[in-house]
Length: 224
Image (cartoon, rainbow, N blue to C red; front, side, top):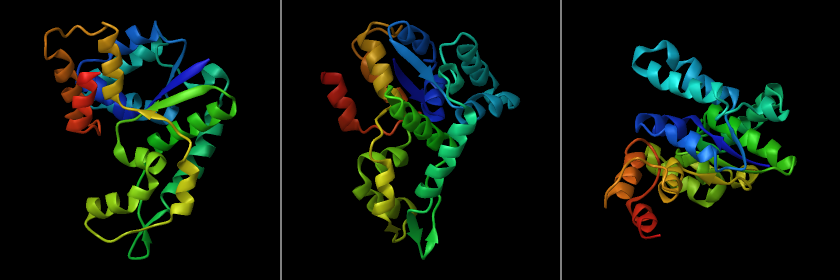
């Protein structure tokens, strides 16, 4: 079995672009599970369903849960208590790795870290997995920790100190963005958008709704 874990940002991106239906189509061709954690469910369903502006998106995600397109960890025997415990451990490490004027800076959210916690547990069970996450910071933690100091300095316009030793805890995670999910769906002929600029339009739509993908990366995907 394999698994694709969704962070809230990737789901919100797809929802805002009217592309959540792609998940049901992709799931039919995926030999594994589409998973979300309880923390992500809270961010995309439980909290926004009480806000008129976000209610429709929350209902759409809940429908995917009801139809088992998206499933929670307990569906494969992983308890929420275990994910919570590992989430707190990862948050403690990440949010005590960057300092400004000798004060720690919170750089990650509970939803993102819960995805990493689930990924870690799946890997320990020898289940191949990848995390769909659009936010840049969490990916940099794992993929390019040496860039964290420069990125955070540019982000908050102050000199920061990064404890790179602590960042080693994030070295073995794998990620994709909503952009790659949409790209895959397009290549499989699952998107309703047609025309010469369809792929370009889809990729830029994900960028402008929060996916940390550069113009250069979009150009590369268009040529593949």
